[in-house]
Image 1 (cartoon, rainbow, N blue to C red):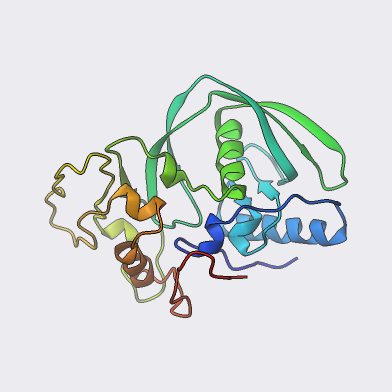
Image 2 (image 1 turned 180 degrees about the vertical axis):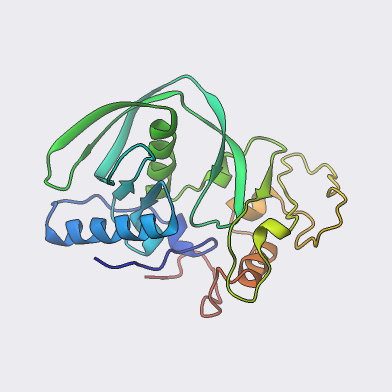
Length: 234
């Protein structure tokens, strides 16, 4: 097993749809084990294969109450019930969190590491994690679900050595569906951003502001210079 590099927004692979796994073999199991080690090292609850550069429909989960991680191959959500608002973050958008709507309950199925069929009815964090990770496999990020006029907030994380800690910054990334003028809150702390529209996160338009912020914090390597659609980052 080995720890892989986690791809961060706006790496274009995060917007690509993962391919179905035709056979659960040793290569798939090795990938999944690397994902678990990477996820645990980063302190995450879930990880999708494209977050480490592999376009395969493989997910790993490690819920707080479980001793070990789960391997999910070709996970599908078959049904959902209810709705709730939850604060969500992502290893591919380090330092941020936002309010989204998720289902109260989901019915899902997948193959385990031995190719056996698994069916579950999940609630609470389990349901939330399933929806979040299946979204990843389809090229969808949680910021695509941000509630109208919601904003991304700075979360307390450790930045790269010599860079400012994200919990010391006021990051005003506003989502404005109606192009209304929303002024950033006044604060004594350093403001890295003023505003960024939802279209800047979701569409193929410019994301220079967020690229700058993630580079400043040391999350995006300088080697990633272009984020044009279709660019191959594998």
